[in-house]
Length: 173
Image 1 (cartoon, rainbow, N blue to C red):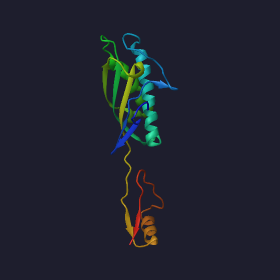
Image 2 (cartoon, rainbow, N blue to C red):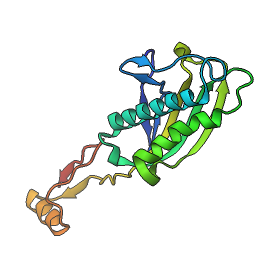
Image 3 (cartoon, rainbow, N blue to C red):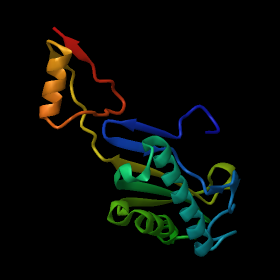
């Protein structure tokens, strides 16, 4: 990030991305206003690159894209000349990429909003709300002995289990 914020934040079972610009290899792939400096086709290309960057943030947050249950919503900000009214067509670039990459998990709700300018003169900025697959977190269990723990877990078919984001502890009575 270029300032005092994080590129993504997870709360509960939702992952929120910060706004993603159409950066590739550290540089904007286009600059300017839609309807003045760029046409809708160039805007769609920029929106696709924003979607690629959203997926990169999701992978950074979740470890792998397979952990995405679905894309809930994207908000597409389009830097537009006053008479440009096809922001929704620009947003299709991102929507189409997300569905191509994730199938039905990529289908989402969407807002497309025209704005007078964006950071760094970017033509498009997109933020996303993503639902990762739910991970069942087991609460701490109490066992009298290690042997009892092993017997109970073996009976349940568990010889090893992993719980992301929270350590499971066993209390021996």
